[in-house]
Image 1 (cartoon, helix red, strand yellow):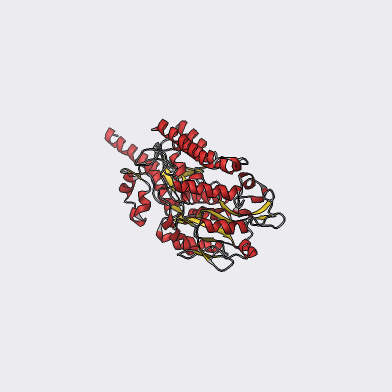
Image 2 (tube, one colour; image 1 turned 90 degrees about the vertical axis):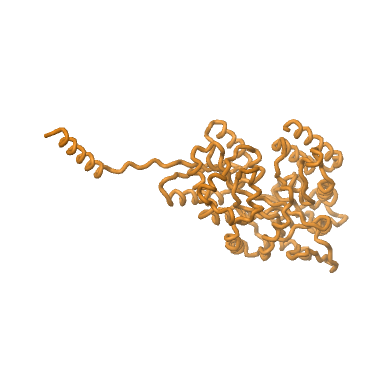
Length: 455
């Protein structure tokens, strides 16, 4: 047999062998998803997130999605920092808001090239939401979840006190027990919150017999708030004044601080830190059933399933004739060190697409995608049949405070801690004895030092 003929025979044999040999499984691209820097660590949320991972992996054969859920939101920043320092940064992080993202400023991947390469349709979102995630020409996020600022109220406690419910129509007015109409503002809230604050003997906070050391029901709380968020209910402001380049605690923030101080220590309708941490207000103030009004964002619907009460939502009160409703916005970020940006972006599109409604529902979020908003509200209506005022959710976004209460400034993490320390001082056991304006001056000075050191 000639060499040429032998080669032909061997080639045929090799082809035949390949035809009958079992196919070698193609190795999948692993994409990691880190959860906990924002929401996502609640038991119900973990269950849904795991189901999303399972569904994505079953939907295709090229990518294996793995999820890493931090033990809690509190430990998540350190957990993520450790992963990054070890050179094992996750591909996707989220959902995460501005605060969590700012802790890792400069570490997020520009998505614009991936958007362009895949022709991903950004026009489905309102332009102002897309612009939230732009840093110069870079796009570091795509709109996903928005959380309008709302007032949650316990209708049963209002009924028991013989009070009208907070308003769900604009222009917002409140009808007092004597039939007079009041502007729906923080002065009005202070009055009705005192009536709704009750001691163990059944005396409300307007009674001379009221015992502030033995309160069993409170009228109002900035539910799970931060100091900048609480301040911003009286009007937004940058931490660093653009004109002067200096830190400024503006008059509206000082007024907000005074209102909170009075509610804590004079009228006693706001729970102190000690009360908030007590069994009375477990698992959280409003969810305990012992708080009449809680100011927070729409995401709080994630955590009210066990509340044994009829509750509803209303517009937040105003200040100086204007409603200021701090809102949150969460999305997913891609880390700049991802080794698989295209695969990670494929997963991101799934989270924003097929998985979006399930995730948004368990996160208690309002969709940035207009096509999902009606379905999202319908699901909430089925979950919480006592709530009648879902139609105020969309209009409440119009009152989102500008600038955002988590907007970045130099020395952001240190500065946020300083704001937190002020809140601890204000609501702690010694808060009644502080010189409020002097402490606000000190806050301003300390923030200036932080900004100067990081500029």
